[in-house]
Image (cartoon, rainbow, N blue to C red; front, side):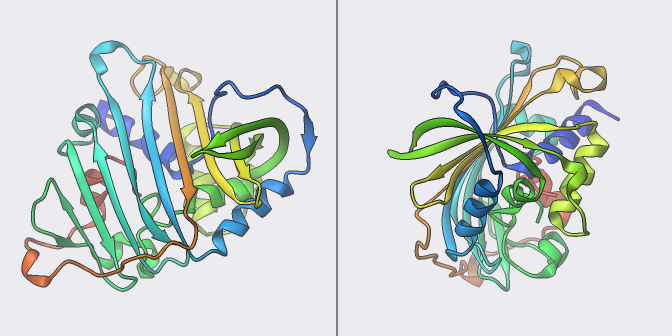
Length: 284
């Protein structure tokens, strides 16, 4: 597999999680808890209809000549798969790896139709095949469901340890260290597909972090994996770490599903492979 394809493969697997990560200096461990608290926090968010979302996907700890390998973004998304407005930025390094252009990419979905544009070019339609099961709703990660990755966490979490508290966007949240076991995820849905992808990439038991606010909602999830643990030292043969983080906030926020005007569109529809490339490797 080529350098670029190997890199994209790991990015796809890890970004599907949009989850957990390394320690960020919170309080000391305070003991094991029932992992159901994490599952409940995800289900509670899903019941709110819409959420603002901010995320980052990046590779760290590589030799300096690799440059900045990251994709960051923010926006609003329906949790019922019926609409989203997302803007993301692909770094120059990541664009080179996946064969895309660096810069801003915008996505709009009204629940029936979806369009995308890169660097201010004309809007192009995203075909049904490039959307989750043809059912609408951008799933940015595996189709564009804002909760696709954390739904995997919900299904795979087997242990949780209370670590204390941190502020998330200025509000207190309880932080949990979680253990994720992909082998316990069954079925043929997106969570099961993520588990299968992880297994194929050589990942086993995973550790992550989840932050839950005072209302019991998941507000941040973060994942940090040592690529040096993979065969051959990861996709670059140079180790490094993959870090993925998502924050969910402003639950129930008003989502404008209005698509850009027809006159502002052009070019052929975007197929799945091209959508993945445009989004810097963070779509399946």
